[in-house]
Length: 388
Ligand code: PEP
Ligand code: CO
Image (tube, rainbow, N blue to C red; front, top):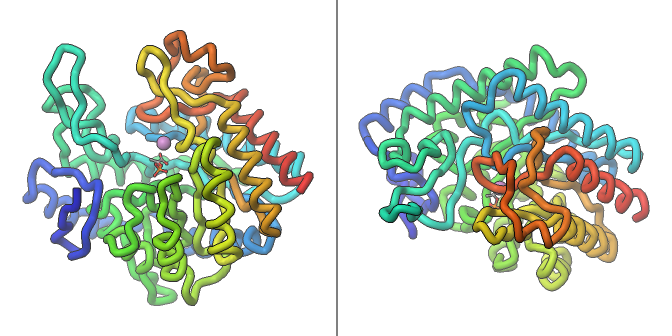
């Protein structure tokens, strides 16, 4: 479905909510416009320098966190637990691979989700709009909670701001860079600011943003927005991606930019990465940073219908990713994971576990690796890098 943004951008745009009030949306956008930037321009400049080093083969990106952060799980203790987990994983990676790990959290702003369906059918019959993340609507399957309320954009800003304050005050040397999917242009556009020192526009919602697999149309509003900002950005690339389209995006988002400005975050699945990635790597070569997302192409279901991911499939995609990049003489630049410090059983170690219900599925969206699974995955990636 192509909708017209009709506000800042006249370009086609996908996956935007049907807000329940245009009047409220305009007022909220104006309010966001007045707010302070969430992050100053130094954040993305420092990160860009580190990503340029990674592009030279001197480092590795570890980007990890929730699939969907929720407002209720964004208090200081939770933010610190998530930042600590990322720092622990990065230290583990560094100790094995002996290269610096650039820590990027899916944190302090990951409140919006692209969805495959517009509505969800309830067990008792009837439908409600799908949950699109706390920045859009509520998770309760009622028409009231699922209405897309622009006031939630302001709440997202407030939650991101308090999470960033917590990180500033408490995270010390392990403070990660923050990132989220730049999905809601009604949030990102008012927070796009002109840097007073350098005179160019940048996204002030986070140092690093990525464009999802569903919204990266070369002629669409999301890619145009990514082109307009100075920040380093990622673009997700799934198994169905048209390589001509990806090459067009790469041309556009790397022209006149430093090395490491664009990351292609590959999420093709363990079964298809071997078929599709070699040709894409040949086409785009060293103009981008190659990051492996071994989560989103490996989503399966339990017999109960609950989403799940098999850790062996995650590991298999990572192994193939490293093999393909090394065979092309390129640097495998990073890993993009959905993880949580919470004791969950959202991802499983053995296929037989898919026959039983998850007892601790707490994710607001996709299944995340728990602490032990995350360490296993990061350890394997670090060994592959050091062996390469
Ligand atoms: C995500 O990162 O949670 C996501 C929805 O990814 P993708 O765009 O790759 O599907
Ligand atoms: Co996800």
